[in-house]
Image (cartoon, rainbow, N blue to C red; front, top):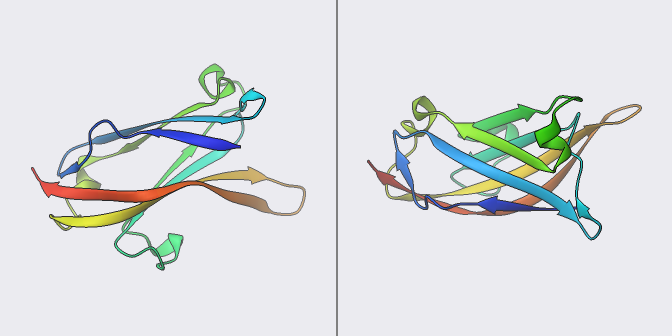
Length: 120
């Protein structure tokens, strides 16, 4: 499975709400994302653990979500969160997908990259 991340509004403006449109697919086509959780993290250094990231956004997709069935998810980073970012700094982002297993939750990192921050 892979993910496509639409970063049309590069760079992120500190203090603005930021929308991330995600599309998940594999070699067979779109990936059904129902009952999965998408986790987006922003951190100042890629070696920082995800649980210590500057921003963590979790999107739990419901079992009856037709949008998720089409491989789509939207993560919103609220302006209250982006206002805490350091302007003129490049953050590292990661998008993970968590799936509940029989004994534990499995997480896969789908997309990583850099996201510059400017002062709005």
